[in-house]
Image 1 (cartoon, rainbow, N blue to C red):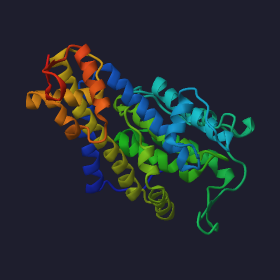
Image 2 (image 1 turned 180 degrees about the vertical axis):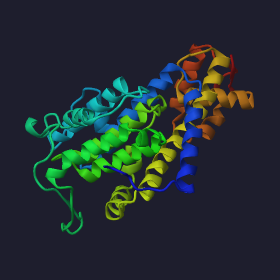
Image 3 (image 1 turned 30 degrees about the horizontal axis):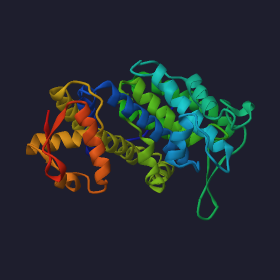
Length: 348
């Protein structure tokens, strides 16, 4: 039977506590629907870009965004575009089927995720099917084999044992973050498929978090944390392979979620202030970030003069700032007093 080896350290408990605190703020923050959609769309974009990039996808963030919007990009590898489309479909599938459902997750879900990730990339025969050949871990620098993965004849047994544990009492009594981290690691360790094992493991960890109530309004993306230091990501997987002790991996995994949620929390708090300010000046009026900045400046200082343009917009031309002011005048949120360069703008 599968019995994960790890310790609940003070480091791990501290990170989990910070995650829970950030989640509470994010989930309860007042955001207008437009901002909520923007956060969710950005999370999808970041997840798709970073998870595929970890495994060699060459498309930039801008190119990925273009593909997700139905556009075409120039690329040497057609599979890069297909990988992006597939990962987007998986993220949407998780959002539609596993947000706070508390479902049991079994082998068939693993197969479904793998099939979706590999559509039009590998032969259909191998999609959602365990590999039947040996697999090796190869050192990227030297090209030397450093480890042999779980033998093909052991894969089905290992996966079934993993999900029996995951859906059993021992798995369910763990904190959702620890549970998802164990699932992520064990799938990469078993390496059940001929391809896309990393993407599958990362998607399954996200699915697990969402299913256990940690969808966090679908704002978060763990993949960016891994991608910003891929060597560190693989280092923690490797030392866990060697020691079969998941403690350090779980601390690393939890730290990734903590870092991501701390960033989101900061943005959400700022946007919540913006929402309160928007409500004060007229409810859910569509305002750009530049327009909000101008209004806040006027609220704080009483007026906005031409000489203030560079104070808050050092990188923008005067014409661009004047266009923003014109839009605010049209919305009757500000009014202009005086003429030419001595004019000032005050709240309407």
